[in-house]
Amino acid sequence: MPELHKLIPLLANLQNAGQQVALVTDGRLSGASGQVPAALHVTPEAVDGGALARVQDGDWIEVDALRGLLHVELSAAELAARVPMQAPQELAAGFGLGLFSAQRRLVGPADQGATSLEWG
Image (tube, one colour):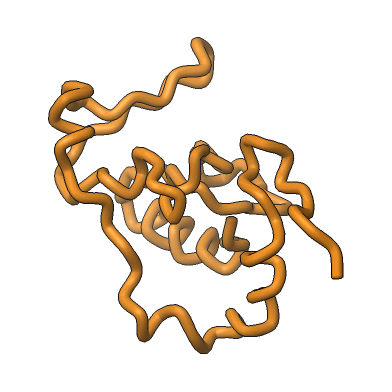
């Protein structure tokens, strides 16, 4: 669950330029202002093979907050047949990622409470 707070100003600028913007992510967004419509903390996370890892450019995603619905407009079979995307290895380092490597290794998925798997 990466923290995405620096992304909102960029998305807001796109909105102010007339673009329609929404964010669907398995990331966190503390202090979200509500300026950009968003579905956050989607689980299971992409890194764990969640559906977001299989979404591709051009896919249509339905977000319905009133019904609590988040749905990609693909058949279950087509979505399951896609190979999940993985971040390139060069992105696994830098950008402060080393600082939180222990948490990534020791904390479980958000849909299971994001609790520590072990201590010590």
